[in-house]
Image (cartoon, rainbow, N blue to C red; front, side):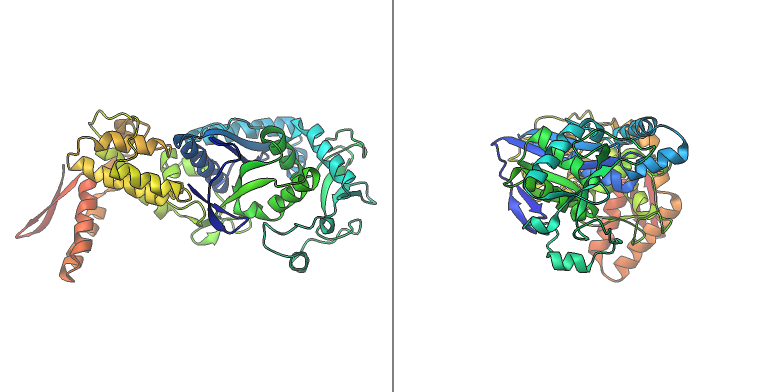
Length: 454
């Protein structure tokens, strides 16, 4: 199995620290608002990573944290005039609902930052003991970046490069602009905990070092998250964990790509920001999951209604192939050609687009009367968290008639005719097969092409 390691910028053979075991930590949500599509991508991508590792025979321990204390949470609670605990509890419930709708399995552990403050303080104590932490004039405890020789190895930048690109207003209490806060001095009317450095609360970066090390050990296999976390969050995690404990923190760093909306990066400032709940008002949750998995996890994911509509139609084709067939997921013989091709795709850095292509090949085989293809289609799809419902249930919610309107069928027939005129018979045949997979039969007559539903 190959995994693209962001640290080495290359695909590497996955060799777990303990044979047969895989330990994974993924940076989860900061719970002050509803989950957006970027959060959905992280949840679905690493759900599939954990599912595939288990399907491959690994004993997996999967940890995805919850940040339930930080500046944004405190600010939102103050705006709402509600306790922080009430705000975070509400949005944790909402996150769980969104994840369940998308078919995301619960992680083995879902630690909350506020429950690991003693472990954070212990790491800070070790960093102070190792000369990597100092108390600023403002009372905060900061990490001394210049004193950690490996800083920048994940982002691939030198300290000089990082300082040149630093755009944050310089805090005069820091020794270096890149130094970051480990422990924040308490402010009035904010949550705080007692500590050797006075009452305060943890900085954002320290929480993940504490929770991952507490649950998986000081050295574990895979650390994941969105590409936006690679710097500074994950860079800082390495500095904290390796600075406190010595040795290697994580062997494989995985980062999923950005979400874009109509080819622009999704952001609140651009007004193109979509929550999972908004999207699920228009689209079936499995369609959204399928849309995410049709793109490779490291590629940008471009959101648009057209792309979601296409995903809906494609997933409808898979369910239509299973309609009326008593097929159940079963043990997979990985030596069979289709299964072997699926496995090769997933073993090559979790290449879900290639794996999904195998599902469509199997659907075509089912439509041609393949006796074993339906069961294999269900079994392989199950490793991706797809096709778990009865076909009638999905097709009733997403009818094929809604996907293939008469106008759209006429457009496809016209495109097929144009392809035949230019002798592009491959494209003409593809259009015919696509319609046939959707239950639409074309008949070429002397008066032109007519269609009917099978």
